[in-house]
Image (cartoon, rainbow, N blue to C red; front, side):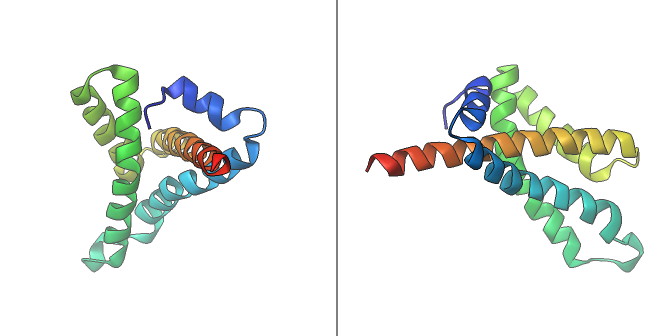
Length: 130
């Protein structure tokens, strides 16, 4: 999708698109929320490898591309966007400062929710025209 961040927000929350925005928010936000809960409450490092590690890795992969794309749009430099992804996803997943991990969780839920809502609207519009 080659829409700017502001265009994505306008599309996702535009008149007639609120249902898509709602489902986009649910679909996009559930992954960061799940990662956060698994990383902070489900993993017990004393037990060695657990399937939860794979779930966290899969969730981070899901979110990283969208966050990278938004970072490229916001910062205009892929290296900064990459650093943004590593920091925000890493802080959300590994920080023991609850307030900081929750703030980054909310940012990630917002980014993924809006991007997914916008995708749903654009997909609906393209299918409606056929």
